[in-house]
Length: 373
Image (cartoon, rainbow, N blue to C red):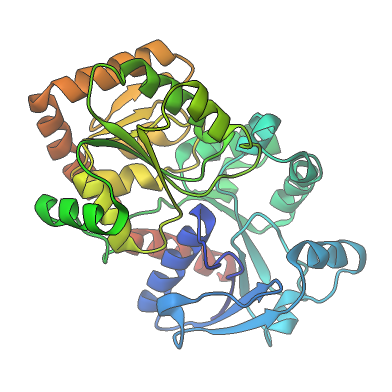
């Protein structure tokens, strides 16, 4: 069995799609001993394969990805399986289904947030891509998504037979583990100038993640608690107002922005030292940061939207992301109740163990094999 996988999302600043693709591929390579794998990527810069280097041969097409999409749209070439020297299954891991000569095709669709609310994404992408994705989903031989919530959205909005869609949950990698609190506290003070106590947010700073709600909720409790708010992640689309918003709310001295954190060790230190993790996103296809926080024993307050209830289970305090008052009240309740935080920590550790990349890889491999009979 010859498997091709799109690795284009393995950039230097890997976000959700890149992380999912990386760990899925890493664990596929470990279990599919009867298969050969080849990677495909495009873009002006080569991918950053990390631990995959030497384990999978990748062919890179040095062409801007959007230009390649146009070339595929207009000409149908190059056919990706032929470019890789022949594959039995090609896994399109980032929404776009490329042309093939004879390979079966699997398409991963993580979420349809950009279709459910176009204001959460750039108009340059949302309009054209929404139309194309419906076509791709029907063309694909199988569709994979990362939650039951996303599967329902795909069925409802793309009119796809549910039997064609497989849910493969993501997970926290085996190398990701909690850090002792004293060690984490010392590390953050030394490397980032951040001191206890603090509330943590992890993720791209963008409208879909409800960053305004994060700021507004924190502003309501800032006078009652000594905590700072730590925001990790890069500013995304339509967040030009962020600094003005922070200033207008009087939060300049209470917020630390640390940017993108590329290494697990950095993230684990933040999760392990934080008083709680706050993630009131409007919609998530999965919500890996919630799982990371629970793995490190950090209590979680998250929204009850999208896939987050599936990931958090009964371990988190779930809130309505549209209700700033309730979010602020919930933050107060958790911060003031040490016994509650302890119970949330214990439930979170149990919940996080329900998700493994090995299981994700096994289910993905089953999809490949099912297509080949």
